[in-house]
Length: 195
Image (cartoon, rainbow, N blue to C red; front, side):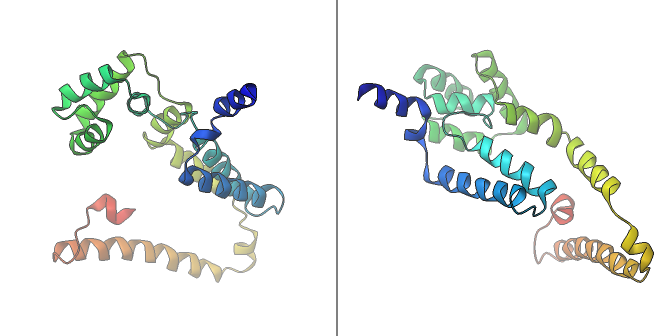
């Protein structure tokens, strides 16, 4: 019985949170739709696989070095981080202080966590290199553009008007959001309006 208990403790299932369980089920559903039903496999397969990897309990694949330090709950290390942030040495207070800190201070805390021996997970590194730098969206859209079938457009050129209307709608939305910001009705920055 002790070996069964040790097996369950080692699997990480004892640390599975409700949110993680729901996201694991959603990820499995996306994988099933992509593989079994052949429903948008180029889109759903990577989303489902990424969701599955990032929600495995106790794996820490999506955690940065600083998030790994906070999840480890080492009192001495938390005290060092808290002293740098001028806050109480508990995880909740440190997270609040980090949320209010400047990006340069957040970067210093991340470097401090790396100096303490913590490493970011694989997905956190992928995010920093591919998505955080802005390279991945460009490569993805170039790939989607290369795979686009223009046969229906060439067969019926009137559908070009539908695409033009969609592009106009995007620009009109950005300009509308910036106009709302100009008149002080709703606060939007240019990146928020473009998103």
